[in-house]
Amino acid sequence: MANLVIDIGNTFIKAAIFEDDDLVFTDQYPLLDNQIIAGVFNSHTIDKAMVSSVKKQGSEWETTLSQKTKLIYFNAAMAEGINNHYKTPHTLGLDRLAAVTGANYLYPQQNNLVIDGGTCITYDFIDAGANYFGGSISPGLNMRYKALNYYTAVLPVVNQDKNFADDAGDDTETAIKSGVQNGIKHELMGFIDSYAKHSPQLNIILTGGDGIFFDTLLKNSIFAPYIKNEPYLVLKGLNAATQKHND
Image (cartoon, rainbow, N blue to C red; front, side, top):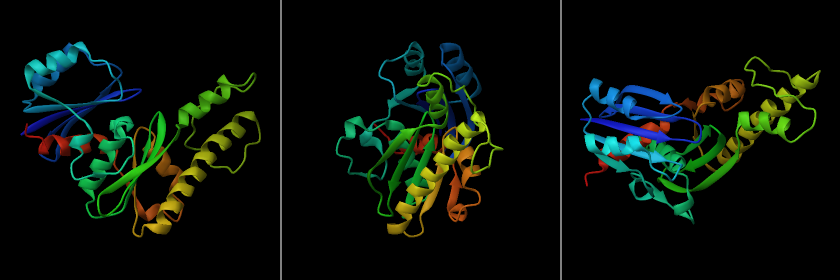
């Protein structure tokens, strides 16, 4: 049985096809359209499709998709195996919920801290009993770089630099890199340390577009042995929900 899962984020639309738990296709798009959907169905036999979106409006391609296969929209009730204690579940981002669903599915009965480096950085913890109480949201890597330029008169636009490893900058550009990248590094380590104090054997699961970059920031930290890279965590969480959805 093949499932198509689609995650509509703030920046990109990510799609994947799973045969049971095996990921057989993945891609990301700035926009989806009927031609892309037709191409997917020409190459694969799809039994079910699930869409998760941070946006409210529907698209023409969703109508086309519903005509080709059974279409399911991910919601809070479909978070497979999760005890959701979030006080306002209707405001919880579905990408965050799908990520902890994926973490619990891949690493059951373990303490998991999901760090998703996307447009924003989100920190979401699910304990060994599959209890989820919430997490934290902070500005993402590129958002921080852009904000320094946007909200000041003279600071330039600077891009992330995976090769920058100094504690301080010696000119304006490297000072910005130090502030942004070291700031995120210390933020990451602070959150991890806080959770690790009360959650032994904590898995640190990095995902999102900047997940690999965050791994580089943390590679020499004491937490490095516990880090797991799961770039398709949200998609795997959606697939887990799709497999259990029989309506």
